[in-house]
Length: 210
Image (cartoon, rainbow, N blue to C red; front, side, top):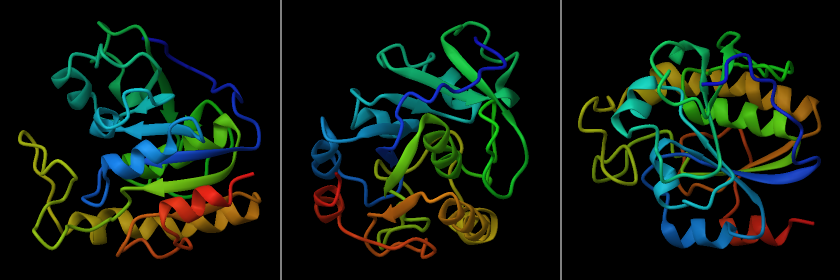
């Protein structure tokens, strides 16, 4: 496990898609990204994009449950909160938790926003993103009650009210910081509760990529 990692600026001025776990995430939309943009998958979203560039998971329990995700061959990243729990997986790079609000500009840390999707956006910035597309960022349960595209985590179910109470309040500050840094962020999730970013469907957003 690599502690004290400093994220290299691997993708200067790139378009980066962050894949959250919301119920709107589909294989069809994910497949549209392949070969067109860089991709960061959050937690189980990697199952729809095993070819993604980066797999991000902030919860050591998730990494342990999946044995460090040996099937994923890209860069693996977690938070320093996981230090000591993931010693058997030396390939997982660790970034410092530098607080909840805003955008961390020091490339050795992340602001958390109390959710992995927020952290993946900060990671995309470190990697050099100039434009960020969000897929699966519903930030609410679907009409059928599902909180994730695959259903829910059996071992630690997501409370539907957690989106509004613990996650959504932090995105306004992140959105302002991204605008201030000149980074365009587009939410491609339909009927999303995350309204601080402009919305477009995936194909239209991809069509605007340089």
